[in-house]
Length: 492
Length: 148
Image 1 (tube, rainbow over the protein chains, first blue to last red):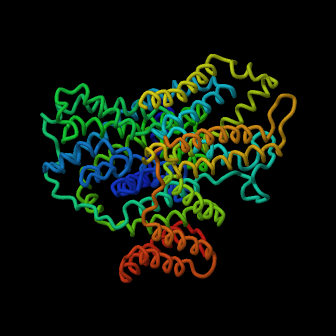
Image 2: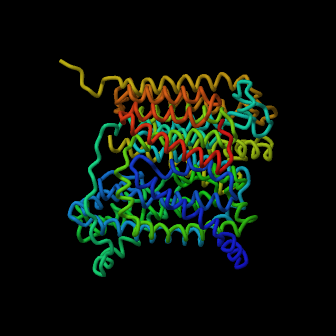
Image 3: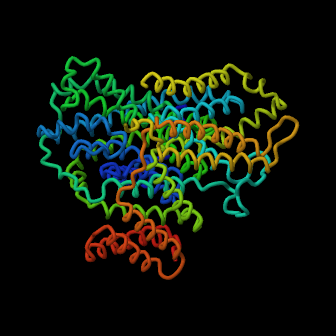
């Protein structure tokens, strides 16, 4: 273990790897700080840039973007009440009122410091919990993997909010798209319409660029074009004093813990984690009335939680191959292209690589804090960049990036049509998260079910009740499908 | 007396439900033309058929709710002309992919794109030039991707 740890550390202690990490954090900070550009979009449209470098360098940059964008999303949330990423929704609730009271600098400082605390807590969780989880998952056979994939897909109901039916339909669309290409067991071509380009299936990265890049630009034009954002005012003092640290200590730990736990739940990301942490902190606070009006406790809990979700999501993604949130879903696609298959085998065969990821994330968390503290003013100034410039840049970068993956025009068209479809789905109130879940988990679910059936010689009952783990996943699936429906029924 | 608002069929959900119903029917029918498997073991058509049937069932539920008027979502396309223009410009840019100089066609595309979003000609040309130069430097000269 110690040898793996040292090998993992030495693999990233190279100026090129650390340089890519720093560039990633800076780019992530820009993506997070500009409303309309999200962490998912940043990871998606910058993934093609990483194919020309080693896996460590590419991963360093993508992890940097992921870790840099989430905390930077709090900057516009605090300064202009517009969350830069969905994860910073709860940050705006107390951050913006605090800025309105003349403490914008303090709010930004808390965001930078507690984001790092949230990230480091969840990275510690990743380092400690991932190996036991992966070692447990090594016992999984095809039936267990089928159960796990089914459970992951069933979560599309849970992550769809009020739109359970539409979310499940979006998941079905993802599953349908996942069937395009050669059948995983018999290599029989399905839905290729005679085009050899589709034999390998739908190109994942261009579709992600379309769904989270082009579609987002069109949504932004639809919703924000012509609107003038308020200019941020003066920042003032950034560092909290001792009394403020004392007040924030418990909420910070609560937020980091809840964020990590929620992030580890497949498909539930920092947005859900930070809202739950904020609400939990409010409930237990002696100063309930201050929440939503510039409470330091509320801000501490939400900042730590939305960043804590990163390590949680990465734990689930690396150990089980199931995305913890949208950016980690896109990261799976990027890792696969680099020849890295997330899952328990990664922990058995490439232990040092896991430690490299842990150290990269830890370094990223420290860089994030420095960027947040030192770069608060320049990033606040970046809010003045006109939206049309950003939109033009994203469309161009997404197009060229999709093409550069394989020098294939078909990938560019895949990005374009995915973008149009994503825009129309978003406008029709159909969530895109379940679609991505279906697209990722579809092949895992199908191939493992069919493998399990081959092993049991076609015995369905024997497959579905082959072990307590499968039964557990089936029960969890049933529960995750029924809970949102029961909740909806209760509210109506 | 006017009908209560909640009883008005939701047009957006009707369209979404209808499109997904068509997708589900297509998947179910087309999957039946794929090998179905043998000896109790599913073939290539098994999974798409399952997805198709589930899609049909879920879309019927959505259509039913939409007809009852219980759903609340509404398709609102603000700035439709601008979005249409942006999509159209991008479409033409992609159609012209591989013809002429990358830098020239990209510059023209971006300048028109920005002008369409009501930036002045001067700003459009400046930003388009800067973005084109950045992308060309990053991909053509940095990563050695042929974009011509």
